[in-house]
Length: 226
Image 1: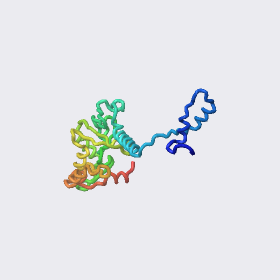
Image 2 (image 1 turned 135 degrees about the vertical axis):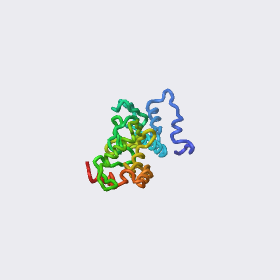
Image 3 (image 1 turned 90 degrees about the vertical axis):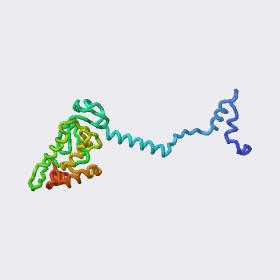
């Protein structure tokens, strides 16, 4: 503006003019109208801050997904009172359903990383005679447990809503026992090779199903839907 020091804001001169007693209302209103508007702007979040919180939320959601079913008092979840709960693990007496699944105090559990023949499935023995290998697998799992307490640690859920868990008896992995004895296969698409060595040992020693011939349980299920 003409006549002003270039280092002074255009409104500074007006702002320096103090309101004094006797100033009329029109002057005061005019003084206020010359003040620049104040605009509130929301604080900006940096991209790195947003990324940090997205990662935190994802980690928390993953932990809740893994441990949600095996948390809380056993009685409140309808489990047998003799089942103890610790984080995402259950310990108690188990009932064998088939060669790769259990009922642990009312909780249906699919043993992680193995695939046993179905209850109605037949295999052929070393002489080529058919036998009920599905029932043989169930008996083998029951023998491995031998009435002892089983601890199952949940790692996932299957499409039937069952817990998928690594189960142990006296520290021994039941999945490993079943595959190593030839009564179940390493379920490679899920196990990430956890039981591959046990399967090679069973095959080379011709234990269980490997003594004769059999159909892969996954193939048998596709050909014999429920």
